[in-house]
Length: 317
Image 1 (cartoon, rainbow, N blue to C red):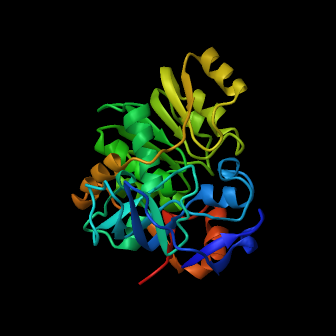
Image 2 (image 1 turned 135 degrees about the vertical axis):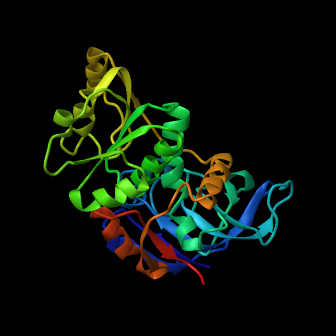
Image 3 (image 1 turned 135 degrees about the horizontal axis):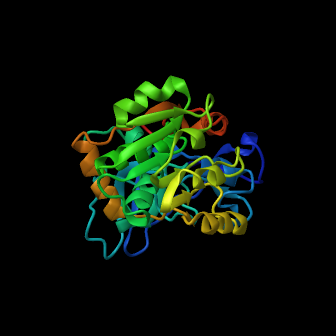
């Protein structure tokens, strides 16, 4: 089968189209023919030797976790899916899933039926980003109606889902983004939008129950600055950078909480998300769709950090 492989860590130029063996499903697993694969910032970081490189080990390997496709074969013991089912998922994360390929295998319960209203391109943009937002807001923060939720990098892949999910949960949603994206974010449900390029958000905001940092501490100390806008006992969820000892100490001094976060496969949550998508409660933004062989260009665009929504690779027609 065709797949995008890399033989060494490095820049986008290390990604190459190659022929690799097609996997076979083990008991409780399904073989999925991939139609489309999502590209995420963690893919870019891992390609360069950061991100999940410590989990995957040294190359060669095939990147990619977000997939949408069709069940081609089922292993013994699979009862939830059948051959021909259209599915989407984020299998194996943070272990290697090999999503930039024509076929993947994974436990059946790490997939869910694709939202009926979405194309495969759109569905492939959902799993990692939407699961991250869902698990932060529902499972970690337990957001309730009336909570004030701040989402940094709200126009990105995770961010635009976080805005919509927080709104669905009944929160008052505050988003940070450049001015050109404000109208769109309001359409998605943001009640308040702050232009981070024109003002310091900590001078504009206060009384926040949950702050979701999708930018990272390395960029203008976003996590540390977010502590100042939280109410006493409020929660900061720091995604790209995690929570250092220094940040944890500052949070304790401020009387707030700070937690790191890493997404995990969750077929049950994907089923819930599919229901919300098909009901029109969540919209999916795809910035562009590129052919599989242009994976390097996809990485260049994602690394630029200015993409509205997600970049997707078309693997098959």
